[in-house]
Every structure is written in C-alpha cells, then in structure tokens.
Amino acid sequence: MRRPFEQLPRSLSPLPGEDLHGFVLRLAHRLDLTPIVLLRHTGLIDPHRHSAPARRMFMLEKDELAAFCTTTGMSPQDAQALTFKPHVDSYPPVATALLGLRGLSPAPRGVFPVWLLTTSTRYCPSCLAGDGSAIQQRHGGPWKVVWRLAATFACPEHRSFLHTTCPACGLPAQRIRGRSRSLMVEPHTDPLHPSRCRNVTDPEQGPCGARLDSAHLTDNDNPSDDLLNLQHRLLRARPYGTSSALDSLAGHNRMTDLFVLAALIRATWPLTADLAPSPSLARALDHDIGRPGPAPSLRISATAQKRWDSDVFSARGTAALLAISARILNLPLPELRLELRRVIAAMPPLDDAAWGQTWLNLRRDSSPLFRHEVLQLLDQRFPRPLPTHVALPGFLLIRRRSYSPKAIPQFLPEEWAEIITAPLGHTSGRSPGKTAIRRGLAAHLIQAVTGMSLDDAGTYLGIPPAWMAAWGRFRPLEERLHGCRADLSVLFQRLTDHVADQRAVDYAARRKRFANWTLPESDLQRIVENYPGRRRLLARGSQRGARMRVGFSALVWSQLTGSEWRLAPDLQPLPVEGVAMVDAGVIHQLQGRNPDHQPFYTYLHDLLPDYASTVLEGEDHQ
Image 1 (cartoon, rainbow, N blue to C red):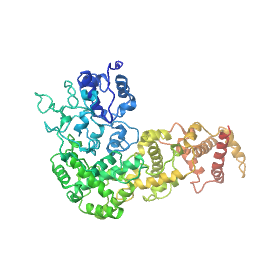
Image 2 (image 1 turned 30 degrees about the vertical axis):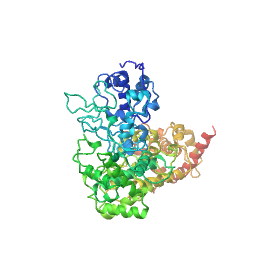
Image 3 (image 1 turned 90 degrees about the vertical axis):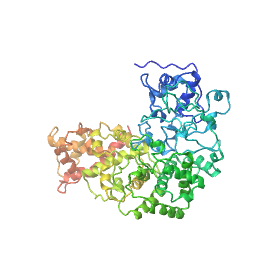
Image 4 (image 1 turned 135 degrees about the vertical axis):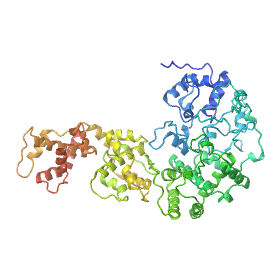
C-alpha cells in the first residue's frame, strides 16, 4: 500500500511558462536532492521506478496530480500548467497525444506525435539566466513548456532565436539517450544547477555540465519583427487571419493547415525557397532538410525515416519553414490557389510513406476552405482517389454549430441519416447495414458534441456493448467510401447543422423516465374494445394477446424514447440471436411493413403516434 504523501518542508512557486521537468530541477537544486528522490517523494513515480515517463509531461493524472499538489503545496491549476495540457485546444500535436481519435477526454496515451519535442528541447539562454531576482539568481530561470512545441522558434521576450544544442557538447539540449521516453535526462545525477547541460557523452566523465544560460548570442540570433509577430500568433494558434474572435476549434484547424502546407513545402523543397524571409534562413532550412536522420520529434522512433510531415532540427530552419507556410496561407484566395497549384504540381506521389499523417490530418482537422482547395488540386494532379488505407477518424469535429446531446435519440431518424447515406449511394429502405449506420451516427453525434469516447457515447444512449462492437467506427460508411470522392467530414457537418435546426426534445430525460415502461394489459384491452370494426376480444393471458401487447408496447416505447424497439423493456433481456422471430413478425405487421397485413394491424399502426402522445401528456401532468 502506498504511504501517504507528506508536504515538503520547502517548495518553490512555479515560474510563468515553466515546464514540469524544469520545476523539478529547480526544486531539487533548492533542496539539495537528486531529481530522482524528488520525483519519488512528489508521487510522480513509484518508489521502485528509476525514471519518470515522458507522459507526465503531457498532463498529470488524478493520483499523480493529487500527490504532487500535496507535497509541493501547489494548486491543481498551477500543476497542470507545467504540462502540455493547457495547449490541447491550440496545438494539434498535443490534441493528438491527449485526445487521439476517440473523443475529448484528455489522457496521456503514450503517443508521441511529430512537431512535439519530448526527447530534447530548445531554449533561450536569457530566460534560463533568470530575471535577476534572488531566487532566480540561485536556481535559475524557467525551462519553458512552449520550447517543447516544435513550432516555437523564437523568444519574443528577448527577441532572439531559440538554441537547439549545447555549445559545449554539441548535442540537443536535455537529450534523452537510447530508446526510452523519459521526463528528464540523468535524474540520478547529483543536483546540478538547473541551467547546466545534463547530457552525457562519456559515462566515465558524467554530465557535460556547461552553463546554457550564458550561451553566446550573435546578430544572427535576432529574428525580424515579422518573424516575432508570426511567433506570437503561432503561440495564440493564429497562423493566418486577423480575427480576434477566433474560437479554439478554428485555431486548431488553422494550425493544422500550417503543418499540412509545411509538409508540402518540405516535399517540394527548394521550390518555394524564394518565399523564405531571408537567404540565410532559406539556407538554414536547406541544411535541416538535407540533414541525415529523422527530425527531433522522431529521433528515437523505430520508423527513423524521412518524414515530410515532421518538424526540422534547428529553430532558424523551423522559422523559415513556418514563415513560408504562413505567407502562402495569408495570400488572397486567387493567389493562394495559384501557389498551391504550383506546389502540388511538383509534389511526389500521394502514397509515398514519407507523407506520414499528412492526408489524415488534412481530412480530419484542416479548415474547410483549405481542405477543399487542396483536395480539388489533388484530384486534378492525381485523378485516382486518395489512398483509402488511411482509416477514417472515430471522432469528427463540429466546425460551426452545436446542439445538446440530450436532443439526440438513440436510433437516429432515417431522414437524418440520409443526409450522409444518400450522397454515398445507399438506397432507401431498411437493412441491417442502414440500421447499423443509424446507431453509429447517433453515437458519433453524442461523441462530437460532448467529447465522450465512442464506448461512453454508446452507454449514454443505452446501446448494448455487443451492438457497438458490431458497427465499429463508421465501418459501413468506410467500406462505402472505397474509391468514392465524398468528404465524410463535410457530410457530417451538414448532419450537425440539421440536428441544430430541429425542435429540441430531451431524449435523455425520456430514456430515463420511461426506462421501465411497458403497456398495461388493461390499456391494450381498451384499445381492442375501441376497434371500430368487428369486435375482437383478446383473452387475458392468451399467447396471441401477449404477442400483440409486447409488439405494440415495444413500438410505443420506441416512439416515447427515440430508441430502437428491440431495446424495449418488454423484450429484455435480449436473446442471444436477437428478438425471436415470432415477436419480429408482429412488429413488422404493426409497422405496416407487410403488404398483406390485416385491418386490425393497420388500426394499431395508425394508433401508435396518438397513444404515445397520450402517454407523454399524462406523464407531463403528473
């Protein structure tokens, strides 16, 4: 059993923008402890562990967060500010690491995307030197979280390019050796000053120890005002456009546009070298692109191949790449099309492995206008469909309007589903495939607006887990999209717009209210007695009467709750092979699906909506 965590006798207040690894280094230096001892005492790792996993950098989970706050006296908000989590809405690689494709419930998933530095960091020597206060003179300034975002190339405060390597050992700063994914380098080393290089080039000599807060600055380290302005906008997820009312989703989409276009620029380099901010920066990018080995975010990846969708090594090369990308994105639409056409005309084949996640990111997360323009040009350049081996996302973002999850019925109305199925060539009518699509779309609508995982969305709607496993993530549509040019994201947006326009009905409350509702036998008897044709009395307890009551009850419950009749309380528990055929036959008669149905079934079929309305009115007045 884990011992209770005790508060440290002394702690530190986090510095603005500081990251978790830098805070641990500063606090360990103040307490004269090795970092590994402090990591164990603060609950960031178990006592038997010898290093902290890099996923602590993404966010602190419940238990680690509670222990860390207890021992350091820090608030949960301040503690999470030391991680990537505050950037989840503004920096797409962080969203990929914490959210993945299943929803918006942040969790460190052990995924390390490109454009995210987890095995080294850039740094500003002036920031590491501190602000001159007594505490920073003793323990140094902050190692900043944003330096780990590979799109950060400059320090706006000190108007300088960030450094990538130690001036003494020549290795990337805070470089993690081998294939591990750790929070910090050499945590067992005696407490060095936090600004000293901890890289080990010779195990017998120990860490490099060079002071990184006194690295020499030259005129070449001074970015232009335009680059500093670009850096400021990138940190606010505004790579192009001037809108000050940009929501977080639009910022996420535009940053994705920037990274997709950067991949196109790298794949066709040096085609756009003339658009670089300066010849020296163009040369820096040229050097980075020609550099052997993968990008920093892929440095220890098993797939150590060239990736056009990844970051580049140096801050100055990064500045050139992103400045070219932002310059193109900021062009007026006619000029943007011309520049995109020029780049796409020179690009390698779409199925080249070096594209990495480029096309998935374009389809899933790019802004609608940019995605439309690029896909149109790709259609002209490559007449055959885009590669279909890229899996469709299990989470489709809502790009404009929203709706309440309570307004989503468990079984989506057929006219709603046809907004997506009709353009994909599905014929009208009922089929197991269309039923599965209607279930799946309902779950995805819940997932998109709440951020739940698909499993949680299915549970919210009351869909049995076995059914969810059968339809998977848009599987019928994914199969239909093979060789099809339909854009599922655009169709899904049309569906969400349609849902937002509907009269609000609280289906969640109805599912709860009528969770155990069944048609009373006395009510069915009155319905039978009111039949205008030849009187038909059903003997109480008769098999025929029971079948009819169950079928009518299931369909009324379906109308009350917006759910499939198969889930009605009268039919539970679900048989292994589904609803018994005898019950299904009655249901089909009551639904009017049998052309030879008897007049009495027509009477019950026509009575269904009125009876459901009567039940609702009676419930509302109770």
